[in-house]
Length: 172
Image 1: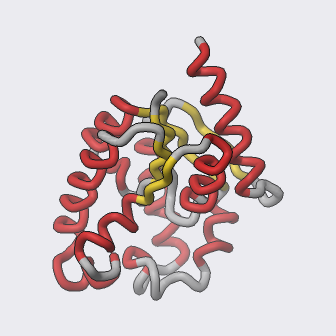
Image 2 (image 1 turned 45 degrees about the vertical axis):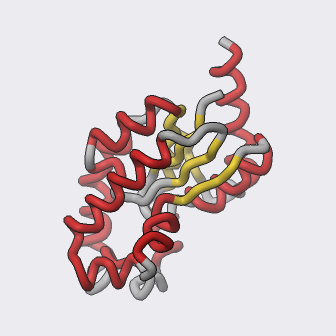
Image 3 (image 1 turned 90 degrees about the horizontal axis):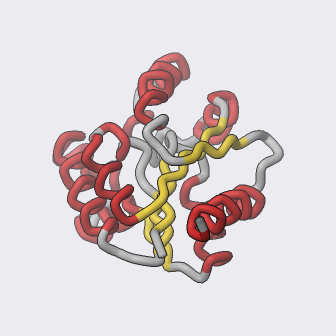
């Protein structure tokens, strides 16, 4: 059995959906950002402040390599994992990559109070965040399946959709 990998922009629901998918499949669940926090003993914000984005992206790549060696696992990735093609290549070797795709309106609603907990939002206007969202869209297209998220989507409904696709893919 292959892993299930979730990508998508920040606040697209990867962690919540990932936990629901893991429960439905009886898989383990890992969040690459959480693995980095545990390894470094400090928050993502602190890592960015102390060491910068490049250092964080290197940690992220190392974490992806580790996670890609797991099996029967749902892997929720950080929003920027897709920026390095090798990250997706590692994850695809052992899993099926799903991109969660909410509209920017949904994202902006979810992140409006998140500047303190998301380092790439600090000092950013909504227009700057939208520009980052648009710039990353081509990277998010490097997935096996896109899952559209709308205002009415719940994590469990989205998880069921992913599990259905996963089960079809694994029986072919």
